[in-house]
Image 1 (cartoon, rainbow, N blue to C red):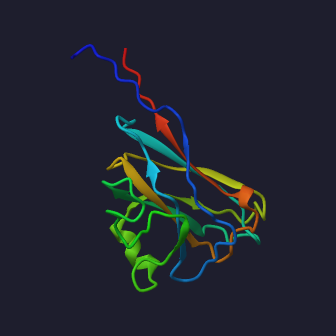
Image 2: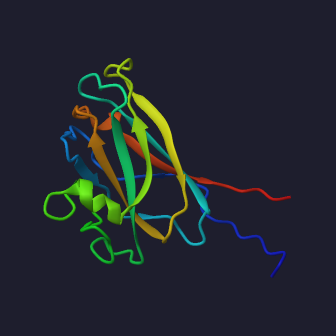
Image 3: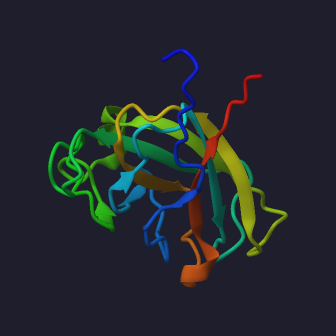
Length: 167
């Protein structure tokens, strides 16, 4: 009906993804998180934020990228692109080349690192995106030339729905 109001999930989602000590190399080391449910109905736009710390001061301008693989299935290993398992585990795409396999995913954004932050937290809102399916698998790729810190609490990947208000 034209005057119906649909209320959908307004709660931020925190990805289940272990980023501790995620190393970096020229082809990037990747980590995938557990499959997430964006809900149905769901917000049209979501804000992605990554908080992380480096094990050593980062090279200025290097990046940590966030990608998303979408699925029509709630089952972890079903219907995923790019050889994703839908579980919190290391990810190498196909044949150990995550830098190539990432192009089967959708890019959410990247943290551009600062050397001046040293080993302190670096927090950035890195992208606004529209989930293409109800379920998604987040992927983090480290191009920082430094490993991430070994403390689990230093790394948080969140997705917050952006609520449009029309009056």
